[in-house]
Length: 346
Image (cartoon, rainbow, N blue to C red; front, side, top):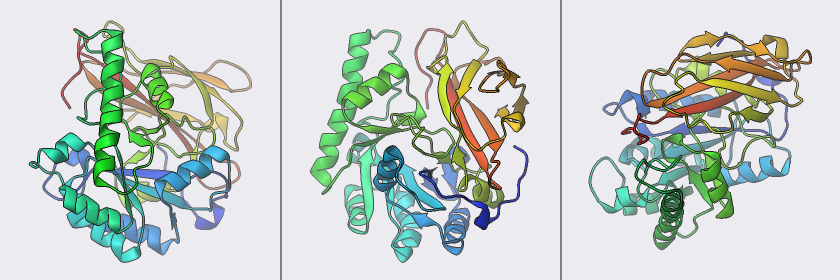
């Protein structure tokens, strides 16, 4: 994305905020899901030095959903998978500042008592210190679509059990567990989202963007922080973004048919203080051609590169604000299963 200078005084108030997503905060874990401790400290110090409001996740969600005012520069912090490095390296910095944060926990991983995860005592200690523990499914499976050997009904029953069993297990360990759910791998689909909504949960993905009244509250965006995407310049930009007002997409689901390997996306936009003529979309580090479908520039189409194999691919679209020196942002995630219909590992 093109570089833009950001001035704190230019950020306008509204009903929007930014959610940040971390996994490991460590120097010896996979770079694709890690932020080094020194980088995490830089993030925290930047938020502190520029007077960001650090809100509990549930508070930001409730305000955005209701269209209530959210102060300028409001951020919520989240951590997926309950890794021990969060307890060891992130929590001390957050506890010093008395900042709230949310840890999305897959209870089966913690119950096994091995691997890189925090234990229940450490998670309870963080909860007593102001953290919120929330639902990341029971077993951290792929949830967007049925497996090749699974019927639609079996899939729905599995998803329901993953969510409700995890919630019940978390409620055994913690004083209060909100109805907040982070999709494993950031994968979801309209049918899965409908089931989540029926259960009364707010959902979160792993795609980029800010949160506001126009957001989909079954799959809210969070800015993923990981090596290569966590430098201070881009962090400074991301924590000051607004949600691009996307009202519809075609297709609605990012789950791809393995026979259709070229992702094509049509997006419809609502009103906002953004320069549609400067809208740009990117995927895999490459700029995509934006094809406007109407003179008013409310609908456009983008086409990505052919998907070579199973995995996840994101399209990010941004446009500069016309009333401030910041960006509107939207992200759409494509998910390609294996040719046999089953999901990839990790």
